[in-house]
Image (cartoon, rainbow, N blue to C red; front, side):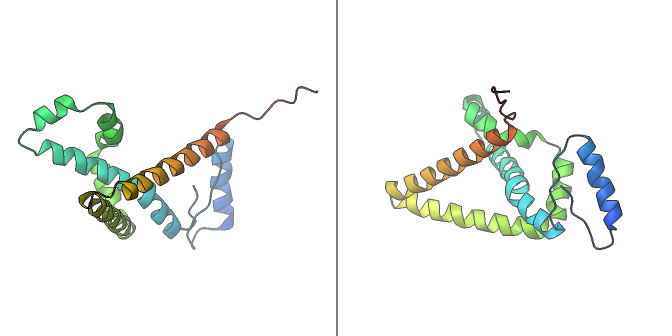
Length: 156
């Protein structure tokens, strides 16, 4: 990921890109603002959520009991809460604006889900879950197709 700044020369940007390509990397360019928005959504917010969930459970009076019964779903969702707290504190503060925007959007999503749950609106809850499932499948398929080795032409 290259996020050139106005003070970076074209030659310097190309030199950095060439070094990454030499390591086998694919190069993507984003403005610093685009980078911050993208990674607030798909990296920084998930870390914040994982830390918040584990902290919430850990602070309950019956935390030991809860952790005793936490299984693979909890483990998978919270894996990133095992990351460096100092590093993620710094990332969160450095990207505060974009992270706050994503957190606000997520809080609105949770508020909507809470309202649907309180209303017993199973169809609306299922629609959210189905949309999320569909989006995740498409994302996984895109990743897997990007990682697949090129097809070998057997006619040669």
